[in-house]
Length: 449
Image 1 (cartoon, rainbow, N blue to C red):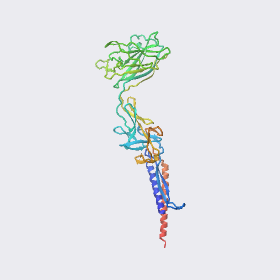
Image 2 (image 1 turned 45 degrees about the vertical axis):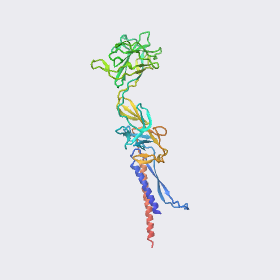
Image 3 (image 1 turned 30 degrees about the horizontal axis):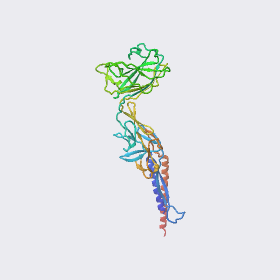
């Protein structure tokens, strides 16, 4: 009996050494979770045995993994991901799903986000408009260039100096004559092909008694927006009330079209006060004409309508200034980098200063994480004991937050493991001593004469 008891103790100590050694070996493995050897005593289960029976040794009851949080270690790779809290990354190997806390991710030659084993990270993809498709799929980064977007909206707020008087040469507007206007401001806008253009607005104060009225002349690239061969601007009235607040901009007479005698078609005033439309027919994108230096010619880009929102502008007794300005157009952009926020949304940054959603990372959690089956390579698979995965986005429900450019370190505490090594070694030696002692007793019995 003592031989079996000592042998079971040696086997248990050996298993303990194996578990501890595996923990130590993976102390530097990102996402690794340390294990603990759990033992149970053994007693004979014969009918009628007394309550003071002698035990039959020890057995390994379970090797339990400890899913405590590891330290977050920051890296220089934007696609390195760490989970701060509950959850596992979901990866797929040709449809075979596994779960991991190791966030070594990058892209393969097809643009799919993969870990260092080539398994594809799972998440929500997006459609062409950047809307999430709420179906779990392989995450993929679109590395192509971003198509340009023509400017369709210009939102601006400015102040016109109410103390100014009508300039001396206001009767004949000339963009090269500062005495023909009071103030001016320029805005970069873009056509349908992504070509940049400079739209300049010139403000001319009206003569008394119309002291709250201004004329706004508009040139794009220094020429008439509709007719690139003309330097005469589009003109609008910009009106303010007695308190200096912006009123509805009203269309006034425009210059005659040299190709079509009579006044040009007026852009329609739309929306609330302070919003007017610049119809598609009112702007022909142009470029310098190489055949006639100093002149412009249509560049082939499609015409596009622009809505001007000038609500918030004012006429107060202070110097002219643009308080805010934004427009929604941009030129072609190449992929410059990736950013992932703590909710798992992947943003692509482009060289044109724009960003676009590329997808969102999904996480999975389980009712019993210790019931997961270790699959090696710092991955686990679902089992009956773990229960079904609960899938959600980071920071939702019980899911942890995602940290981009970081990895979760192993949760192995080396000092504890080294102490465990000493304890396991002593246990092994002590059980070996039990066998040695039993052997000596047996030998004594054999030597009896």
